[in-house]
Amino acid sequence: MSIRKGDILLTGGPQDISSKEDIANKVTSVSESSTDLEYPSAGALYRALLEKQNNLISGTNIKTINGESLLGSGNIEINGGGNLDPNTYNIQTKQTLDLTSFSSDYFYPISWDPTLAFVSLDIRSQRFGTTNPYNQNRLSASISSMGYSDTPKTINVYESAQYDENEITIYGIYTGNTYGANCVYLRGGLTYEVNCNVTLTPHQYAYTYGSGDSAEVFPIMSSSYTFDTTASNISKVWDAVGWKGYGYTSRGFQSDMAIVGRTLKVNADTDLTISGPSSGKVNFETIFGSGYVFDKPLRPKTLQNSWFCTGGGGGNTDHYVKLCNVKFDLHRQGEFVSIRIYIGEGNNGNAHQNAFIDLVMQVGWTGENGGRVGCKWELHPGGTTFSMDNCNIIVISNSNIDYDVYFYTNVNYCVPNYSVDCSDLVTVTHAGIVSLTAPTGTACNCSGSIVQASTVLYNNDSGTNANLTLTASAASHKSIEIFFRDNDNNYNSVKVFNPNGKNVALISQYNNGNNTAWFKIATVTISGNSITFGNSEEVRLTHNAYPSISSSSNIYITKVVGY
Image (cartoon, rainbow, N blue to C red; front, side, top):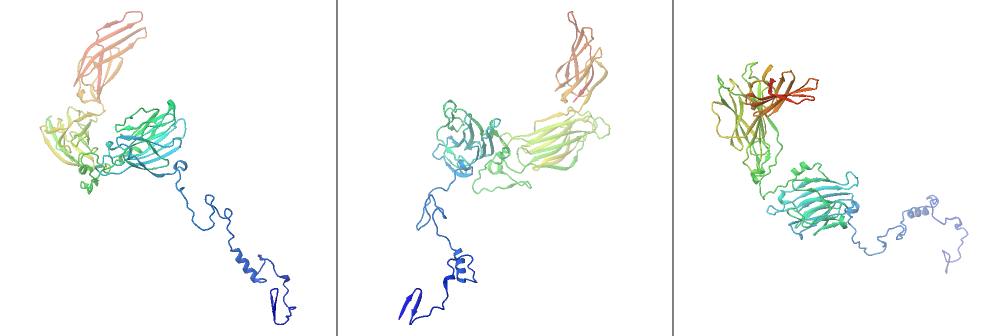
C-alpha cells in the first residue's frame, strides 16, 4: 500500500518522520546573501539570474522605427531617407545636370537658393574626343554672402579651364542687384558633373527672382554672349572669356591657375616627345601645330667665357665686327639673350676708354611662326666721348630663329669684348670677324639709346650769345640741359628731352625792387652738333608805365650737358 502526503511518498507501512529536517529556517528568495557556503544551489541560481536578459517591451527597452515595433516575426521595409539635403546641412554632394534637351547654341541660367550664406561650386562639362566642338570645361568657385555693408558678397574663382575661347561651355556668373540671387551660365546640349553644397536648378527659359520693378531677371544667352531678352537688375561678376572679373570678384590665386588650367586636345596614339638635347620640355607646337607651347620656366644660362675681338686699324675708319651668331631652339615667345659689349681703345685715361653697351634680344609673337626677334640696346658712355654717332649695333636676321650680331664703330683702335647671358634654349657661337663694309641681309629693327650719364658738350664760364658747336650730336642723347645767364648775371637752365631739331626759349627774369622787372628772352635751335641763336628780346615792365620791348642779345650760354 502506498499513499502520497505532501511531497513525501509513503510506501509500505507507516514511516517515522520525526527525525527529518525542519524546513522552517530555509530561505524563501534568492539574493546576494545566498553564499555558496550556506546555500550553494541558491548562489548558483543567483549568478545565473544576473546574466539573464529581461523581457523586451517595445518602446521601453527596445526602440521602434517610425513608431513600428521591432518585436515579432517578419520583415520591416524602410523606404527613402538616405540622402541629406545639401542646402540644409552644407555638405558637398555629387550631382549631374542633364542639359542635353537644351540647345547647344545657348547658355542657360542655373540657379540655387539665394538665401544661403556660403556656396561652393565645382562644375565640369562632359569629356569628348577631339572631333567634338566642345571639350571639357572646369570651374571651381565659392560665393559668400555675409551681409556686411562694405563687402555684402564675395565671389572667388579658383580655377577656370577650357581648350580655347571657341569651346566655352561654362560661361560666367551673374548676381542680382536687389535680392542677391545668383546664376552660373552653362551651355545647353551637354551634361555636367557637379560637386557643390547646394541643389542646382537649370532654367530652359528666363529665370526671375523677386517681383515688380526690382525683380531680378536672368535671360538665356546666345553663343555670342548676348541675352535673347532683356535682363533686369543683374550684374556679371565673372566670365571665362579672357578670364575676367567684374566688381565683386576676388581674383585670389586665379591668374596662374588660369594658365595651368588650359586643356590640351591629344589625338589618339600620339607620342609626346622631348625636344632639344637637354631641354626636358614637351614640344606641343611641333606635335599640334602653332599655338601654345607649355614647358618648364625659362632659366638664365650664363656663358662664363668672354670673347676678344680684333678692333679697327689706325685712323678713324668705319669697321664692322661680327661678334657672334645667336640661334634660338625654336620661335617661342620669351626666349632671350643678353649681351654686354665692352668697348674702348685700351689706353688708361683715353677719351674712349671704359664704355659698354647692353643688348637684349627677345623672341616675340606676331600670331604666326614667322615673327622677328625684338632688339634693344643702350650705350653706357661712362664719361667717355662714345656716342650713338661713333658706335652702333646691327642685327641681321638669317631666319626667325637665327641672327648675326654686329658692332659698328669709327673710333680708332676700338676693341670690343663681350659676355652673354641667355635662356636654356639659346646657342651663342663666337665669330669675331672684322670687315670694312656694312653687313648685308635682312636687318632687324634694333633701336638704341644712350643712358642718362652726363657728358659736357659745351663749357664757357663767360658764356656766349653767338652760335656754338657741341662736342657730340644732340641726336645721340635722350636729353640735354642748357645753362645760361643774362647780362645782369642772373643764372638759369632748361632741360630738353629728345632735343635734336627742337626750338628752345631761354628766359631770365629780374626784379630790381623798385617796381621794375625785366624779362630777357633768346630763342635757340638745337640741330646735331650745333646750337643756333634766333631772335632775342628784352621786356621791361614798370609800375604806372607802358611796357617797353627792345631787341637785345642779353642771354649767354655757359654750359651744355648731354644725358
